[in-house]
Amino acid sequence: MDNNDIISNPETQLNSFVSVLKKINSGDNFEDILVNIVTEIKNIMSVEAIALFIINSDTKELKHHISIGSIAECIYDVTIENIAPLSVRASKISSPLYSNNPDEDSMFIPFEDALGKELKNILFMPIHSNSKNIASLFLINKTDRRFQEEDADIMKNFADFISIVLINKMIYEESQFKAYEVGALYQISMAINKFETVEEVLKENLSVISEAFEAHRTSIIIKENDVFKFIAGVGIDEDVLKNGVITVIGNPLEEIIKMNHGICAQNVNKDKRYRPNKDLRYKTSSFIAAPLHDKNEIIGFVCATERNENKTFKLSDLQLLEMLAQQIGDNYIHFKLLKEAKLKEKLAAEVEMTGFMQQSILPTDFSFADAFDIFARSIPSENVGGDFYDFIKITESKYALVIADVSGKGLRAGLFMAMCRSIIRVYALENKTPANILKKTNKHLYQDSKSGMFVTVFIAIVDTSKKEIKYSNAGHLNQFLIKSDDNNKISLETLHTQGRPLGVLEDESYTNSKINYDINDKILLFTDGITETFNEESEEYGEERLVEFISSKHFENSIDTCNSIVDDTITFRKEAAQFDDTTIIVAKMLK
Image (cartoon, rainbow, N blue to C red; front, side, top):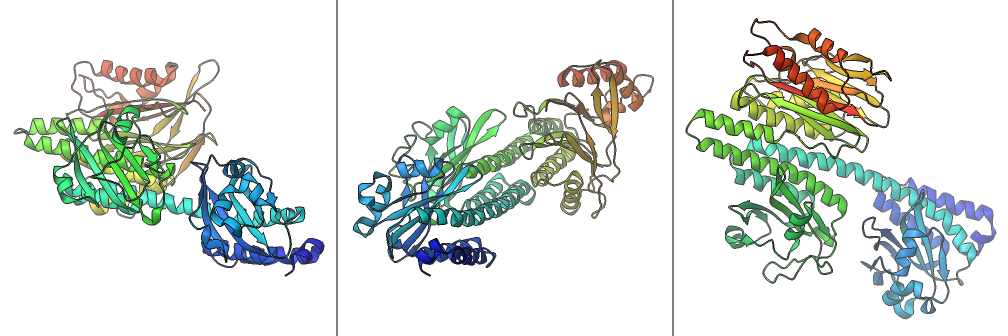
């Protein structure tokens, strides 16, 4: 097809666009579709070569993705750095640019360096979605004439087609990544139920990390007696794993300790945080690492490098690694505390350590949740209780509040509680409904737990974008939404659905209910340790007394609401013993 015909003949131009549109619907492999479209555009526009570069959203570099044509091999694997004028233009400006004398145009220096005298003329076309540039298309060497303004006009339409495919490709890859993310978290969290030693669990965790990040070299480093050592590794020499003491001075690990968050380096050779290491030199240049925490203390690191196909790690990879590192840290702490407990000669000491483990995994810092003023308390009746609560950020506008009561007390209840919490977290992060989370969790608990234990659970998912609370109940008490008008007059909305506790029947189903809220409303979640508090005369505190107490008082913030309810039950109980665990969580809506 003659390019002059496309410029002068609207019908021919329309046929060209239809031809490219057909390519969009030619299959379900986005990479193949891109190659087909780029090839079609090359033929229509009569150019010697064509190349597609993707903008790295983190570094703003232009990274080669596809190139077609006889001289295209010179462009393979070219990366245009973010300081280059062409890269700056590609990320910020949405208008095309062409040059018929590129050897005199500093904008196209990267292509001059790659192609030399082979470069005769070139047209640059940015690819954008909404107001954000996501890629760039380069047409190289017109075979029939020089580039002109009409070529740029035609390419604006072709650029829209490329944008459609790229956006669909990104959406698909993001959904695949999310599914893989949840699967990896599930595998890591369930390892504590499959293995008996911390070494086996961490080795299994590390294999998940290696697969998730396509990394040939991964490691887990743990601090023991104030010294950091390898505890597990893939792609690392056995002698190094056995004897290697890791220094944290003058290397990336020192940066992690200083900043208290993970690091991601596109190229360690250009990153001042890295220094050459002759003994452990990396075979590739991209590296990520995340800290392992015990409360606020860094107790180790998870590291990954030597990625497949020379891919570079991105900030999204670091975010996933940090989330997985949190669960790996929980696994390590779980086994560490369990080992310490087994060393105790008396059951009381063992139970005390398990109680410490249980309390340590309950969230206490809610400062990252700017949508809520939130506070919680959990007071076990013995050293180890069966109650637990959780707060999970699902998306930027969705948060899950969980409260639960495990049957029984002591060590078994504490371990069962830890398993329940991990499984609920996995399914909550899949952005499922409360009822679906309960159904999936119930099935796993029924299949994996042979102890006959069960747990009552109430889950509320708050959507701040809709000001809506969706909730479901597995055998737990009714919960409340506390509302107050401009005169601080209090009213209560009961949150109730029916459903059996988790772990009783394998194929149990659960129902969702929803309610809208206003800013300054409060969600009140609690266990039966509140309502089933008894005084010395064997009188029960009860739901009616709780409702009366809440309705008669206005508390400005969550901490006052929470503490006042707990204090009122303690005052009611007087000298009577606490027979059940007491757990309560209050979340005031701020947006």
